[in-house]
Image (cartoon, rainbow, N blue to C red; front, side, top):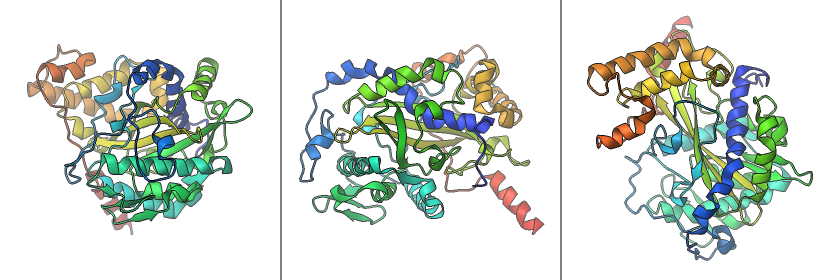
Length: 423
């Protein structure tokens, strides 16, 4: 496939970090949350579907969003949530126990995500949706879990009009015989329900943890077809220090964490377009006419669960995009991002791919910071490390500005016009 790049390249290193390091290394410390969840009274779910008790064991039902309005809904701003952005910047897990309400977050871009998923699946097939035989039952169990969860959390978007079924009220799709779906058939149904991707892993008799399938439509910089059926050690080979320092503890934790111990975390990267399947910057340089305003901060909300029946490890990834210009009114955030890029360990920022975007991004971040000072939003003495507390101390809401992915950026329009003129 033309877009593939060798694992030794900078972009592939970043891909390895996002698909595996941020998938599994976070679980190295998941034992810390055991006491947090052991104190929760697991409210058993009831229902008519097969395996409902097993699917829901140990976790409460999500709180229903009875007045959820898809037209105005926003996901959490992960610039602030989950310690995604931090200074000083170190290679840490920055994980936290996940409340069941936060497993699946739906926002006003929902329909665009689902339509884009359908397009990518149609064009790329097994490159983005695949399952090894040992994972086929787990695909069905994941679908059952979602079919149980979604109508409870989002009753205005999903209904169960009959036992063992789920109807998407947004798209009109109805899926029956949910408990009988397996393998990629189940994964394709999932793609019509949620914005998230799911990677699926399993321990094999050799004691290693392998990636055994998934719905990975929006990876951005890697491909499921290039990572499936490989163990963590192989997948992490390009990642500095991981195999030497983290692999053993990660694999040990993956084998031990329980279905009632979900985690969440977030990771960030700088991208140059809206193509969630494969960003141009993953294998090329940004367009020569790209405006710095139209660079994107891609934050992947990552969730970790273990399925009770099949013991499969489920890693959910929901990409959320913000144009860098969207950060103009986020106090201290542009300054924070500049410091992360200029004062962190060189090998970490090189790992992020700064060579491709740094000359474009850094001057613009300084412009945004200067503007915030001139407008009185911040002062030059404010500490970027306290950007979250800055809002709380002043009673300011978390900024919600977020450019729609459904609309081309000015840079994209200019590039398209240039192409038309060339023709």
